[in-house]
Image 1 (cartoon, helix red, strand yellow):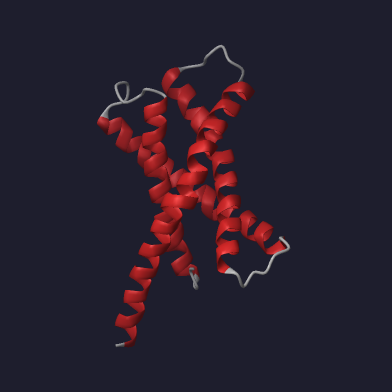
Image 2 (tube, one colour; image 1 turned 30 degrees about the horizontal axis):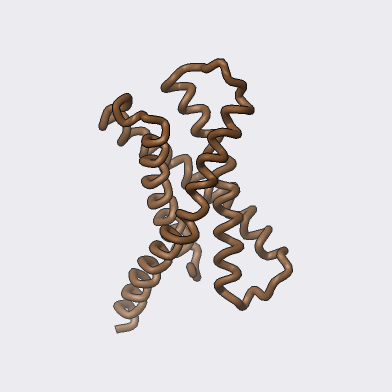
Length: 161
């Protein structure tokens, strides 16, 4: 999809923005926090989470996912396979790290519980992977790729005209 570093940054921002906004609402809903968190706190939390997600995606998960996909034994000229492999690696990596972030923020907002950290992390990870994986493969991935192609195709035609 992205052919330049600049396009890669835009694509990553678009994907992170979409995934963070949907995952934020999902986590607020499943943890029954809509009545606990104020609108202002929710917006602040969204922007902090978005910033953390962009940093994690850009500097940790993205480069590792690209290396893993490049090492997998399949024909890289088949774009659907590359997209599925990359999406799978990205979702697994992002959920792994963002669930840790979620655990930390939940302790900040709700306080320490009697559950072990490992059990709490595993519970958060499972809930997030079950929602994030299909969200990425079926909804957000195709939507962001469509918007990205449309936006950058329009920019390319404007530059050449």
